Image 1 (cartoon, one colour):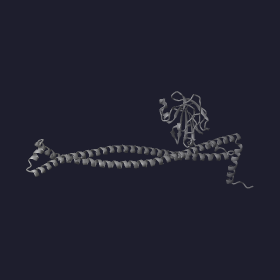
Image 2: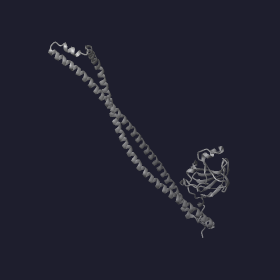
Image 3: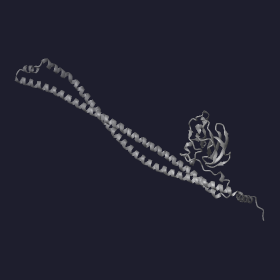
Image 4: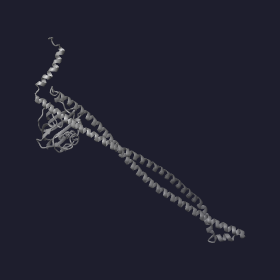
Length: 392
């Protein structure tokens, strides 16, 4: 039988050694790997279904908002047209008011110009006394002159009365017209203000709908992205399930990404949040901690559990954090559990979601509880936004 070449020996080693390792690997370990992988697959499927339901709900909400937005846009256009008509009416009223005021001023100017002549004539008549017109008649030379003088005196008196009456009538009519125009202008100005306020309200409502639609679009994009991450993880889990029974070294490193589980993470410990993200801690020593995480009250010794699977990156005392556990969830996502009274994991160990990692101690303010911090993409985020709304 010919000797094996170097390439053939490498091929044989590559095929035979994994089979030998699989045969030598304890059956219980293989079963545990399969159980853990199946649990991760079930969790990924459940979360993927939740994300799909959320995407459908967001799509329904967006359709409803789009209908509202179109209705508001039509309403805005109608109010804009109404406002344009009111503006045109106000412009017309302003022109008519200006013309009426100009006519009043012209009539008053005419009256002022006529007043000296009328006053002079009244003075002459006054000088003649009460019988002025009679004397005028008596000075006539004959009957013809008498008739002519009588008619002239009567005509002057009638003319004066007519001029005075006509002036008063025209002035009263113009002033009444101006008053009516001013009232109409005030009414139209009020309607204009109401129309502008109504249009502004519709515009604000439309803007709010548009902003909400943009937020929903962003959320839908994020949901699709997270669903893609989960689907990729799900595929890896299926491949891992198919390979279990052979070498499971890769299966031990399997973990679900944490980002798709925002708002669905279990609480590390049940309790009341005593210091919130971004706020000040009750202890001056812990003020920097409170800005990056939260403090949760819990009885001393209460088990503290991992919120998501991952690898323990640190476990031990750390200045300002007491006993601290840091879990690496991959892709620069970490969860930090500080002020623990005891530790149950070591650096390098892999932990599953819900696995105890230590026990609650006392926060730096002196009350029983823990400090919890979450970092995504290497930056602190508000843990409350990532944990489930209801505690266990």
